[in-house]
Length: 362
Ligand SMILES: *Cc1c(COP(=O)(O)O)cnc(C)c1O
Image 1: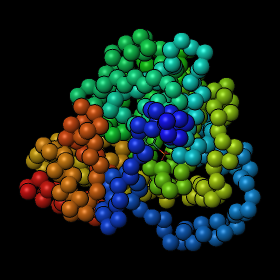
Image 2: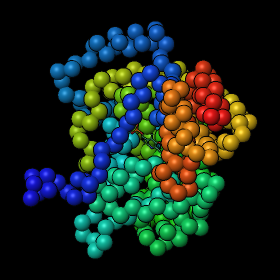
Image 3: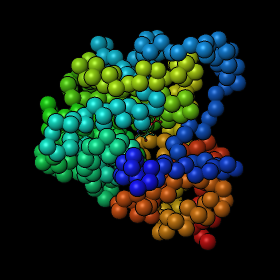
């Protein structure tokens, strides 16, 4: 038996690490990043602010000022606090570990509509929870009856709803989400993942006081700060107190902390960029609709999902023209021949549309 076989879990040994393709020289429309940079004056001021940070000191792990600014800026209701994560990915891991009870006959369950955000299933598996995916309808709307039946049968500890959903861009119905919150009741938590809130402009945040089992998950990544890795999560005081025990004490580094504290005072800059992206999403949607050989799905996020006749070929031909999009065609049977395209700047979107016209005609 080799060292690896002796010590590494077999399910981990058989997995491959998360792969990110090389995007150098490409128009990068694969990862839902905000394409804009900060204005020069703001960058200089931020640089000066960061120069004052004591890099020799550990962060102060209460993060009081940053949490206050997040609560104020992003509409966390009075009486509710947040927990910070190194991206919302870390918060998802904390939720999985917290609910991975070891005193049950069968593993606790995590439920989410599929196709959905892959980290829910990955994180559940790593923590030893069973993941149950409930297929969306073919038009990517939520199958309410199937969700309620699965909740009744499986009694999941965690139900995830990405609002809007990735990779489909769908904004699920408020009434369906409320029905799920009520059906789950006291038997589990419902995590409404609002990573794309800046583009959907709707939220369950203000409804936290109504539902004891509601957890709101957010990130600053899609708003324009993917590089600093900062997510936050709100829920009842009792739930947050438990999740806080799983947070590595210094998980938010001082540069992330200082950058976020500084930029949240200038969030209007990021909000204006999100508004530009929403305008471009509408233009991109219209122009893609006009292309023959492309089916496009309505999106409330900063990306659009489209279906072509041969996603592998179109993806490769786009890459030849140095346009990188995400081929999600093999992620789930409902996504056959689908590509996910992040909304870029006006110039980038024009480049995509031109490259796509070439790719579809060759
Ligand atoms: C991008 C994304 C996240 C991840 O956010 P990070 O904070 O960058 O880790 C979470 N949920 C969904 C649905 C996403 O698409």
